[in-house]
Length: 418
Image 1 (tube, rainbow, N blue to C red):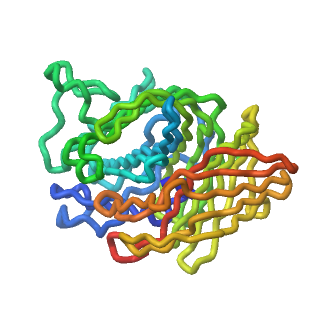
Image 2: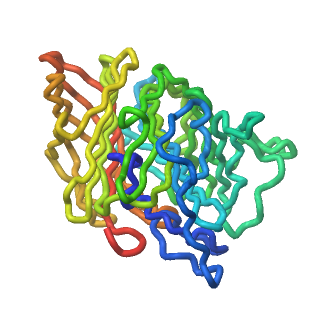
């Protein structure tokens, strides 16, 4: 959602305490303890692995036996006639004690040309969501994740249902589109596929149909955050975190039942670790791609008292060289605000980012004001995540770009806090 990120830092979004494991289902990221069994199993202890260890790709593209993990895409798509869209597609993984693994997915489309924001969410419990390939040693060689639209208490998925956009072998010819939301990839060659059911599409505000099918290819190496891919949260634990900041995207987008051919770009974040929550106030996360080939991400994590215990950033040069930014290296100024008519949450709504050492100033402004997701049914939180208008100056030269911003902690959670 996406993010300052905490996707680099789960501050409120991942207060994941599993009630979704109950047959009735429910949010997995901000929940009271599950009612069953009568004596609840303890939360899993941190992995016996000694952290940090080197991040190795493509092995670490795949799932990990850790408390918290997510695979997160945001991006920008355009049609031949100039229509523009932003997208967010994410899968969260939560592992808690002897409860089955829980999965949540969010899909959001920003119709920049039509000034609309559409989103949906899914939750699934159990190992069947993970079809990731593994080598002879049992280690992942990538990821392959898919979520069924059925609720946790519904019958198991049909045999033979497989990867992104693929229907079961015994499916009827009319069922040409998979019901699964799926993402798969290895080494920066990825495939995303998601189409809403009729009920999901009606709830999202696009009853004639909504979905996407994209192939992505990285154009730069993966960037490790925190210099070596490890972010230390102190007493709260730590997280491995890398991004593929520049990926070419192409495929189709379905909106209002119309399937459009699109091309554009995407940004991929992957985080995992033995952490549940960090801080207590939320975070602001920024991802910017400038048209000179520079990519920038900033994370500002707030504590409950409004202070910022963790601030950091990463800059990726056009040639893929990665530079770590500490809190003294940049500033972020809020220049406008937006109040949600649905939740009453008061969000920052425009920013100026300054990096003095690079003589770089970046202005961000949302393409659509209302890009808020109420995901209390699955994650227990409300957050804002949306595409941005981007302009910048560097050494007196004007630049343009694209960006995404994620804001958490500004609205009430499912448990009544903020």
